[in-house]
Every structure is written in structure tokens, then in C-alpha cells.
Image 1 (cartoon, helix red, strand yellow):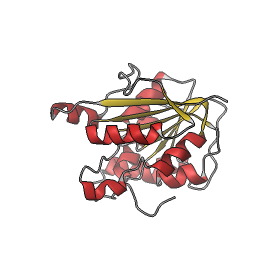
Image 2 (cartoon, rainbow, N blue to C red):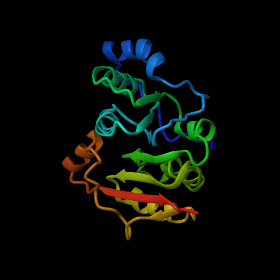
Image 3 (cartoon, one colour):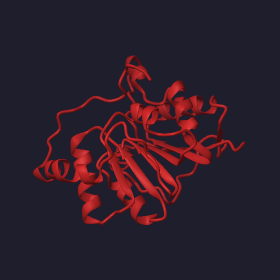
Length: 215
């Protein structure tokens, strides 16, 4: 959809347990890039699942739903795979690939009950704003992939990113803000590692909860 990536593949340390998961569990719980994603249950896609703690908690709390976690960083993918195995989560699958390409090529229109984007990289320096994931074209793609009544939930601890994201999402005709501006933190959203770090640094947290307009 655009050549500029919203992430940098960092050379973080992959533990032996994470590497084992990538080697042995990804073929079992992963979805290969290019395969169409479908489910008989309400399907939620999480963009940037990090180390997987939020994904696993939501999947465990909602066995009536299916979850697809999209993440590019190996240690995070390995960590989530280990959680899936340890907690016997039958309703989570993992895609190790760029989220823009996943949404563009693997997800059908009006097929998702929800999309989660929790604490994406805010790229705070002005010269890096072009790397921010939530730009107009991608926001429109997210709206297309949501089913009528489906939701898009974004959370960030960077005020500038929150304000800009609000502008971008409110400019998409197919999306409706469920709040006046920012939504209260839903009690069902688990607190993430990035959120806890932001709170320790004195950051506020902003939740944006939009709904796909029903025809």
C-alpha cells in the first residue's frame, strides 16, 4: 500500500525458548502469508501484538471469538506462540508479516468483527511522522475490512499521535466515533507492557473506539 515501513526490525535477543517456538510452533499455530483468513466465529485482528500478553488474555477471556495476531518481531512472535501452547488457546493464530500487506492481501472486505491497534510506534519526531501506521489510506482499508457494526480500537500514550489519529479516523466516512473524542478505557482491554511503561513515565493514555457504519 505504501513503500515506507512503520517499523524497524530491531536486532533484539531471541531466547532459546522463543527460537524453539518459532521453529516448532509457528508451523502449527501460524498462518502463512498469502492465505486468506476466515472464521466461523467473530474474528478480531490485532496489529502489532508485541510479546503477546494482551492477545493471550483476550483470547482466554473470549473463547467464543477467534483472534489473529500480526507481528513482525521474532521474539514477540515466539513469546506469543509459547503462550498459546502453555495456555492451550485454540482460538489464536499468528501471522509474522507486515500488517499493511496482511490487510491488503489476506483479509476479505467486511470480514472482521474488530481490529486492535494497541500502543503502536508513535514515531514522535516530526521528520518520522511519515512512518506512522495510521495514515488516511490505511485507515480506509481498515474500515473496508470491518463488517458493519465492527469496531476499531486504538490506544496510545502519546498525545500528539492520539490527536492526529483522531483526525484521520474521523475523516473516514465509513467509521463513526463512539465517543465525543476519546473513549474511556474499556474494562475488557488488558493493560499492556508499553502502557505500564508510559504510565511510569507520567504519560496519559488515550483510547479511540470507532465503529463501522451500518448500511
